[in-house]
Image (cartoon, rainbow, N blue to C red):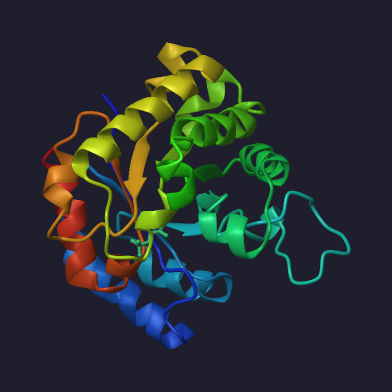
Amino acid sequence: MRTPFVAGNWKMNPPSVAEAEALASALVAEIDGIDGVTCVVCPPFVALPAVAGALTGSAIGVGAQNAHPETKGAFTGEVPLGMLTGLCGYVIVGHSERRQLFGETDAFITAKVGAVLATGLTPILCVGETLDERDSHRAEAVVRRQVSAALAVVDAGQAGSVVIAYEPVWAIGTGRAATPDIAQEMCAFVRSEAAASLGSNAADAVPVLYGGSVNPGNVDSLAAQPDIDGALVGGASLVAPDFAAIVRAFSST
Ligand code: PGA
C-alpha cells in the first residue's frame, strides 16, 4: 500500500515572504487532522525558512522547486542542495516549466535526481508530454524517455525515496485537466516504465501523482483511479481551503 501524496507547487507565488508565511499558517489550520496523506508544500526558495517555521509541529512537509546538481561553484543564480538539507525534505525536479522556459534537458534532470537522492532528500520528478506530442501519438514515447533517463541513476533500494508526477503540459495552468481515463492510463504507464528501470517490486513503492489543473471539483474522479496515488497541485494550492479539499479527497482513497 502506498501512502497518498499531495504536493503544492506554489511556483513564483505568493508575491512576498509575509504572504507565503500567512498561506502556510492558513494551511495548518485547514489541513491538520487530515490523516493518511503525505502533504508537502513547495514555496519559492527565499520563503522556505519562513514557511518551514510556520509549519513546525504540523504534519505538512516542505519542498523546494529546484536545486542545482553541483555542490558549489560558479553557477550564478542557482541554489545548492547543501543549503536545503535541514530546511526541506523534497525537491521538485524536471517540472515542465523548467524544461520549457529554462531549457533543462533530460541529462541535467537526471543529474539533479542523483544529487537530490545523494543529499538524502526526495525528488518529485515531473514528466509529461506537450499537446503537440499527444496529438501526434508520441505521449508514451516522451514519458518513457523522461522516466527512463531520470531513473537511470536510481537504485531499486532508493525507490521508496522517489515520487513521480505525471503532468501533461497541456493541462498545466490551463484549467483543462486530463480526463480521469487519460490520467489513469498515463500514471499506470509511468509505473510500468518505473518497473522497467527498477523492477516491479521497487516500482510498486513509488507514488505516482497526477498534476495539471487539479481542483476541488475534479479531484474526486482523479483520486478514484487505482494508479493515481496523489496530486501535484499548482494554482489550487494557493487557496488554503481548496488545497485542503484536494488533500481530503486522497485521504479517503
Ligand atoms: P496547475 O499546475 O495545478 O496550476 O495546473 C500544476 C503544476 O504545474 O504542477
